[in-house]
Amino acid sequence: MGIFGEIRREFIARPDQAKGQMLYKWPDTNIRKMTQLTVEQDELAVFFRDGRVQGTVSPGRSTLDSSEIPFLGMLVDAASGGNLFKTEIYFISTREFPSLPFGGMIDNVVDPETTLAIGLRVFGEYSLKAVEPQSLILNLVGTRNIQTNDQITDWMREQLLKVLRTDVVTHVVSQNWPILGIAAHTEEIEQETLQKVQSYVASYGLQIVRLGNFTISIKEEDEETLKRYRKDAQYSRLAGGFQQYSVGEALQGVGEGAAEGGGAGNPAVLGIGLGLGGMVTGAGQTVAAGGQVQVRCGNCGTLNSENAKFCSNCGQTLAPAPAPAGAVVACPSCGTQNAATAKFCANCGTSLQAPAALTCPKCGTESPPGTRFCPSCGTNLEEPSAAPPSTPPPSQPPS
Image (tube, rainbow, N blue to C red):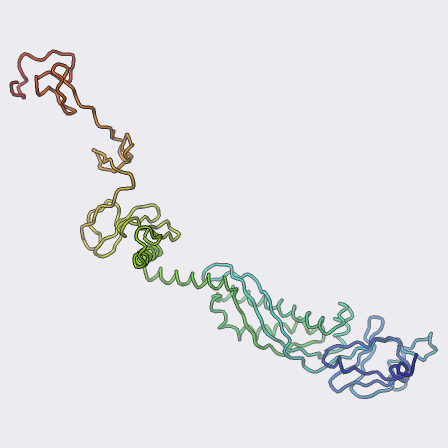
């Protein structure tokens, strides 16, 4: 080994490029006796061997000799004739490390206001400090084989998110916090998270000192869904119900379509379905809501039943509801409109087929259905085979 190697072995200190790390492990485990150890003011040197912390050296310059540092006597390597110490040396910074980022998905939380499942995210920064370096080495580095600064901060980040996943969800459920306004509770969540997370990290000799730039957000698509839901709910209350709101939305679409010059071919004019099957079927006069045809009063806008002749609100005469497409045959019994090809009334079953005209078997005169005697010769049309009477019936004038 050259002269520079000998010098390196006789002086141990944290290198400049590692001064920004919370934890730095000295690369050699065979430490020469009488080596000069330098520990900075904001760190401690921890000696670790056989799964145990053997001792700690405070800030300052020390000579590694068992006469000055008694616990080194347990680290002497007998195979070297007592000239080497067999140990791992960790430099642990005790200063606060600020501006460490954290963030990610918390959970899908059921919004108590809308009962919709909403994805919550949290972002922010935290500061970390080692308060018990011995516990850090023993419980985190030694048991989880964490050797780098990044591994430590990644582990702490997971502990923060673990607390947030349980704490935020608990608050939303127990206190019925609406998700859309959860930002108003940011400070409260931040303080409780900071308090509760300590129990998760204290056993590792660490402390999360503070949180900063703490933000709870909603996925963009979920936020849009909540805003739309809240808008619909508010408008429904103002309109007196969701059905009335749906009708209003449909009529608004008709007006917008007409303003754009779309005419009857514009989808807004044809009707807009709003979850209830509602549709304006013609000039805003009839509305199918839940499968039931209703007639809108032209005077006050109130919806009335299909067969109403007068408005139930203002008494205005209602225009009859237009017949369904293709309905051209009216039932002679109940007046229901039926398809042109229908043979019987869909409402009362009355036959819709017109009776054939009656032809007199004697003179050939055609008469309307139901005529009893031929108006030309007096023949009894109910009995076509019978001969005509010698005298006309009393109710008929002589031929």
